[in-house]
Image (cartoon, rainbow, N blue to C red):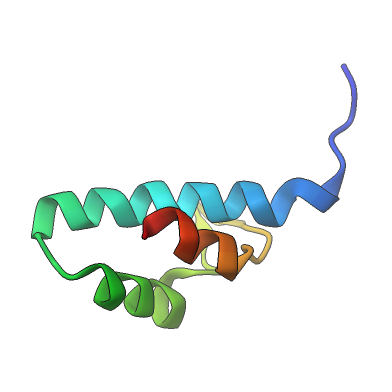
Length: 66
């Protein structure tokens, strides 16, 4: 099995966060920019199940959610 390069990890983390943000938008019906701001302030860079995530590509995150 080939080892993954860490150079793509910020993009992978951004995609994961975007899926979570899109789910939140679907459930709450909130405004896109509000959800992006909330994620940037409180959720990006957190850990999941006690595993620290690589800091996401914030520009890619915002583009995907928009």
